[in-house]
Length: 279
Image (cartoon, rainbow, N blue to C red):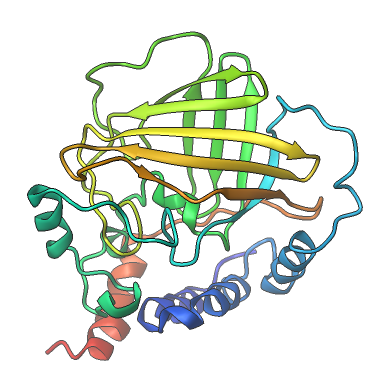
């Protein structure tokens, strides 16, 4: 179904609403965009995912992470419900320069969030937008994560290669994975430092190291944690809360959700700037 541009522009008003209203706006936006999966279907799927599942007790393989999943992460589109570690002077300066479009008391309608000009959302931030599904595919030598939001993907190499010591920076990092018992451990570095860690604008450097641990605990649930080690930005590692991925039902489809610069420019001129008081 062809996406209605007017509806998309209206949906983008979510960048101007208070954070508490954002989840409903996100779901409403999905319905307005006229994508393959309607907003009503997605809401129903998420309700089912948050309740007892008839398939939860089915047999499963701990090493099988494949499928389409819904994220369950801490409130606030971030790593943890508690504040991050103290920042270094470099990190604090970068944080002060960030002007979020949505993030509680820091929200500014005319902010400088990179995603407002269609820069890639980057990793791990994309994991915190839980109104959009994630698909995991496991193939020989690689695990691939596809993100509905921003229509992006991430490659985790599982062919035994070592993590590069000085890789070219990438928006979704350079990643290798290995199994330790029933836990899938992913190590990443080489991140494009123009991206933010979260919606609040917490920064990172190109040398940020990210460790993730994924563990499938039952047929319908993967638990995972993240640890960021970035001495240039933070005085100690930032350890996430435990987060989960819940298996989506069979009707859930991955959509083509792309940030289009021309649509974003129209939205900025006709809606964002006037609402923010720009002259």
